[in-house]
Length: 83
Image 1 (cartoon, rainbow, N blue to C red):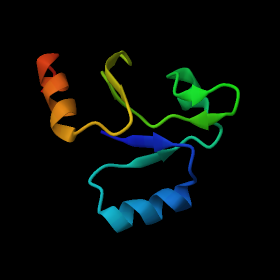
Image 2: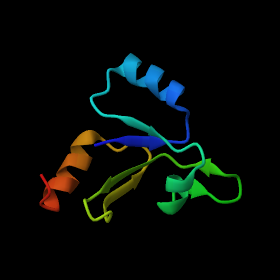
Image 3: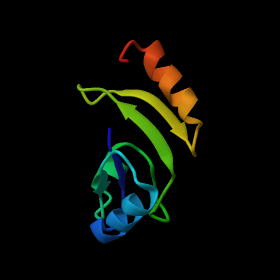
Image 4: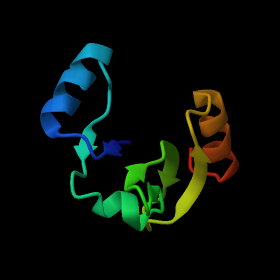
């Protein structure tokens, strides 16, 4: 599991340390991945916070804008038979 945003690696390191996150935060400062997965608002170039679960074949298994409860994300992944 990983998280990605357009923030810098320095920002991610501080945020990850503060929250003691057990997964890496990846930086997409050029917004390439955000654009590829359709979470970049095209006119204003802002990112819509979105939770995506992507399988090993790079297929989206779960997509929800905002911050869904972790239990919802886990249930959706279990329903797909991944966990």
